[in-house]
Image 1 (cartoon, helix red, strand yellow):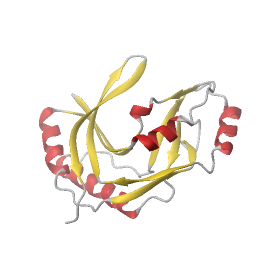
Image 2 (spheres, rainbow, N blue to C red):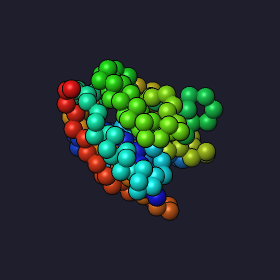
Image 3 (cartoon, rainbow, N blue to C red):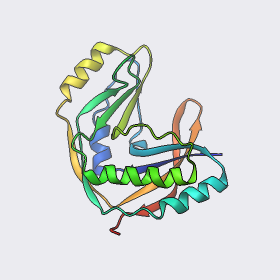
Image 4 (cartoon, rainbow, N blue to C red):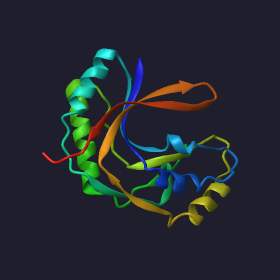
Length: 183
């Protein structure tokens, strides 16, 4: 079964800026630049039949292209022990939310049981071990609070499959690419 998710790819200029934030810190595992993306919706394990239905449904989405800024850094979850260090989209374009809504509607039409939790647009930069150094992380957040990457144009989104690997970051494969365009 393929583990699928819908996502926006980041241009190399943005991935380079985000990768430059990586600094050695205890308990912080930085993602490789090629794995940096913005997840629109995690779908999870799917059968080939479900995958085909998801691909067809996503192909019907109609949203105009837009420009997206990447700015700020933070931690998830906001309550309890932090597990993820992210770069945010605090001033995200309304069309990003329109795209996310249409992705959810398309996926739910195929599988009404999908979990459609709240959307916090972000790019995961690193995963945090339980024993991460909170003091170092707090200094990092303060130092990069005003972080901004160049805004980038969003003209398509992707359906990706992730392949988990023991002791290594997952491998991502593009299953489908969906251009954005008006109705």
